[in-house]
Image (tube, rainbow, N blue to C red):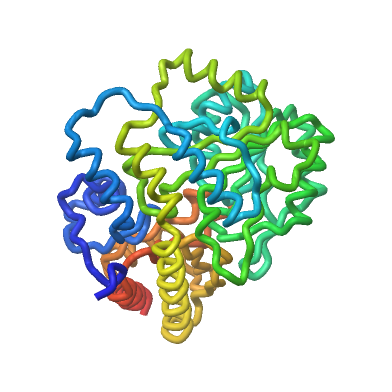
Length: 390
């Protein structure tokens, strides 16, 4: 049996995805509800990563640790070989997650009241974190046609003029699953440079792109404007290591890095744990074969969901994304409100998907579904959706 076919019982493991449904969805008893919402996988991490962490555990001493050059070498070679992006070891700064890194960048390079530009529908922390830090959210809602998204650059430029100091790019895009083209990325760089706006490029899903598409690291094509870009990458989505808490901020500009390092010192931020450091190194140096198999599994799972729901519930529309393991499901033709469809899914189908409104008002009419799980679980989930909506 393939590791991607094995069902791993995650209940009662302090899993947010499996053990906090009552709290998240306001349900009295969620013991029979299938969670296909939050973006972590139900697959075990690569064996090489588990072995590396086990080695740390077996050593038995868990003192202060640092990120070794071999670890940085692994990240650098991965980015070059996978994404044709040549970086340097000294460009890398480490954090305990991409969301904390986003907060660090906002705190370091903006002030209270400054505008933070986002392109909804988009990952909720993009607007939640700035709001909690008393920044002003400026939205350039993406243009959507038949579930295909694009950026209206006329509106984007207008938005940049609203005291915007930082643009947060989701590349690839969550929840839309878009892999941006080089032309689109160059236009974003051009406009941000025109208005002297910093760019934070969240590229946590960069490795989860299907072979017919190609992820382009924003900084890799920025040329002289690379100094205004901070890129966040992580092995956490790629290798299902979210709970290990590890992310990398990459900035080619020395002054930018110095400011980020000063912020880390001000907060007493330490390096990654020895477990996280071991996981990062082994994932990026030995995780390639596991990832190749994973992408085949996810692609097949998506094809199954799309085909089955198209036949059973024609009012549901889904485009296969360019990347991620997340489906963005369009239910607008059902005529149901978000409250109505969520109630049907939870009470009749006994399945938990994410409501589109979580990603901003432009997400209303959509649901997000996580298919990074064994095919048997995917089939169960599809059956529950059909039951809920039939």
